[in-house]
Image 1 (tube, one colour):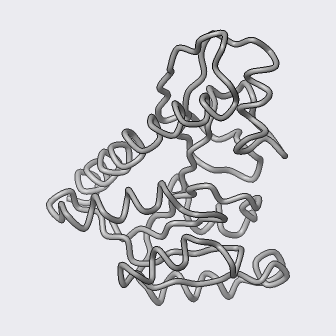
Image 2 (image 1 turned 120 degrees about the vertical axis):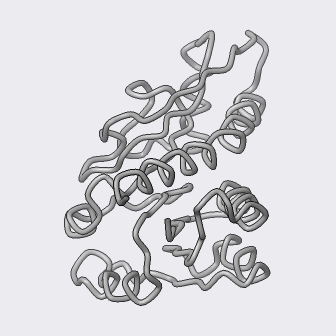
Length: 195
């Protein structure tokens, strides 16, 4: 699997994924490109330090053209993982990578999903509603925020006194422990399909 990671921020999930698969080539996943919608994203520096090629998206071109498809083809990308990528994926990209784009969401979908529900906003809402648990959802991407078929969920118990920041830390631990595992399984199933 030749993987492109799409990020908007510091890219802690991207870092875990890059480091894991670089240390374990036998897993069958190679991160060949990191794409960001922000020229100032910390993930770009992190990727450059690891010699992973990077690309910064232009919003107009991302939504109005298909140049990105040429860039992805140039790097041999056959799978995309969103790791804290905040833009809605356009229909042409979903169509070009059917069931080959996944996202990780910091809540147990369908709760706390949809437009504007990301990062700290999710954890504040979870706290405000007094939830007894939160977690992560890894799902396929379609043309709507957080509505693609679920691949994997993991939950963590919350204590009444947990702050949104503490909830975020618990959820991030789940993300780091599980996102690469799901990608590895997807790579294994791809291998089975192509043989």
